[in-house]
Amino acid sequence: MSKLIVNSFSDLEQYIGKELGVSEYLKISQEQINKFAEATLDHQWIHVDTERAKRESPYNSTIAHGYLNLSVLPYLWAQIIEVNNIQMQVNYGIEKLRFTQPVLVGNEVRLRAKLISCVDLKGTTKAEINVSLEIKDSKKAALHAVVIFLYHFN
Image (cartoon, rainbow, N blue to C red):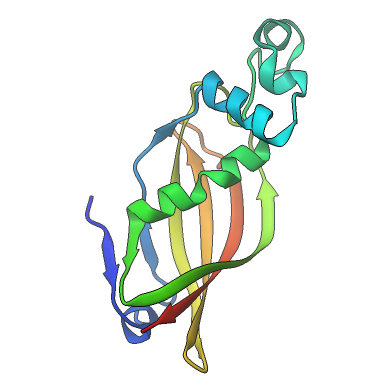
């Protein structure tokens, strides 16, 4: 898989309406879920109690926190694109976020990204990207959203 290389606003602008790429799969482990629970103080049993989840959950398994799934987007995004010649990148927002399918412990997820728009705001590039976090061997994605980045090119 080759990473898309972007060096300027005009480089990025040519991808409006096009898929930017797809990341590698990332396996979600119980250890990762437990660490996320510790970091966020969200210890709901559906995430951390493997025995109870086997007995009582409709999934017969623990599931990743929705926000854990969201939090792996930057790691997966970096596998899709390399943006050079920038002073900084800012996570500006997330719109239309929907968690559409739970991610069970042991599932593998990957990011698919498509550039919706790219505008130059007085030297700052505002990019809106449609993202889906796909689950390996599942017809439904874990989440869909529009993420917005601000790139300050040199």
